[in-house]
View 1 (cartoon, rainbow, N blue to C red):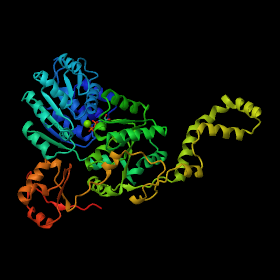
View 2 (view 1 turned 90 degrees about the horizontal axis):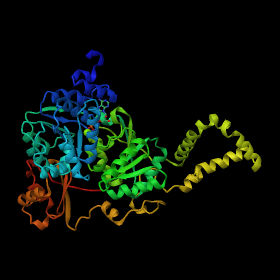
View 3 (view 1 turned 120 degrees about the vertical axis):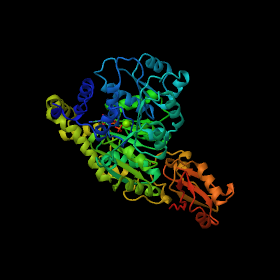
View 4 (view 1 turned 30 degrees about the vertical axis):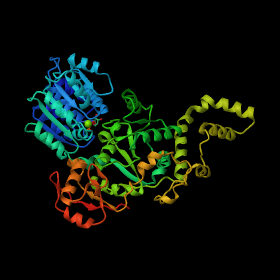
Length: 560
Ligand code: ADP
Ligand code: MG
């Protein structure tokens, strides 16, 4: 029998869980599910490493549901997630899988919502608590015993939690849990900081690693487009004309940019909305719901706000602003091509960002092909195709419903059916340009090849408005006279902070504090401003310097 059902049945999960899984339409467990479910069911601690979209939620939710006792009305499993969106998504998944388990309740605990009802739900006997670390700590401060009965802990997207600065909160939470609990940690990457947590808080963990980077990416067709920063909005509008999308998510770097781009899209008639960390929680949930059910087609989001967002309708991801590192690129484009569907990802690249494009290609092991902006002919073809698609289904029976009216109108007006049809088309298309000449007249001068250099950035007709602050943010940080910029491959993910770099350079280089300029620590590298004078000597001196146990290897950094 097991053979016949195969897949999930082989795990011997509680029959009611299996039934719920089958009801969701899952046929086969994904790779991470295949490997993790037996380990977690057996009660082992585990470290699971897998990319976004690999099915991690069910990988822990199913075995955890199997292990809890529905008869006991107290918290038994705690799932920690980096953001409210993700916590809600995990909670919803648990509810789906527990649908046929009477008595099992799930509570989501996150900031931005009142604490009272959350605490009440926990005290009323929710067995599964899905929480963001910050809010959970608030609860612990009020009642340190609130987690005393939890014997399964899952850290979902552990690397993201650390990136968001939840390290201290995690320590508080670990202390509040019974030492005998089972601990499972999922993360897309395993930087040193995560390994350290595992070392301290997991007992003899089993390791599961799924290499899906390339696999995740292959279901997604990737392309990039070279464009100047101030032409991005018009480039996006042109691309939308020709891309055949269902739902689309656009990534930008700032909250302001989500608002600006969303309103530019709305002004062109798209059903678009912004999603960023400043938007109230209930409003964010509404946005995601609307994207799911088609009231919205485009969401313009920041990375944090879109974290874990899972909307199967999404066919396209536009990276309007470059992601900060290749990992977030992979995460972003993982919003499309969910669960084996096909997706398309477009990356806008400004001239200065070409290097990052190369890094992304190297890390994902794939070439991200260059595309050009559609020309007027392509836009015209796309518009006519849309019009054709919208009219074609009506032709079958419109004559029987409106044919007589047409006869009457042509007679009354005294015109040919062709003249009347043309008038109706003009009305229906509402002033839209539908000839080559009209499109060319309408369109801003967007480049169809590599962007022009900075000097003629003032030529575009409907250039997006950018605030002064935004412009400043985009401008390269000017280097002070006599300073050189140097780079090391050590960054935040190596556990490096600016003060470590400063300390090492001061000590080993024998410099005065004032000689060192700005220090910028990024995830996978850092930049330090040093005196140009005697730089080669200084770099030689620092040749063998180690920071946080790793070779500093500082080199001059040239931007072009
Ligand atoms: P991750 O947490 O690894 O990013 P999720 O758990 O959010 O991935 O799952 C991604 C998507 O795949 C979800 O829409 C989920 O419902 C779907 N999914 C998960 N497991 C399966 C499966 N075995 N078969 C089909 N779809 C699945
Ligand atoms: Mg997940």
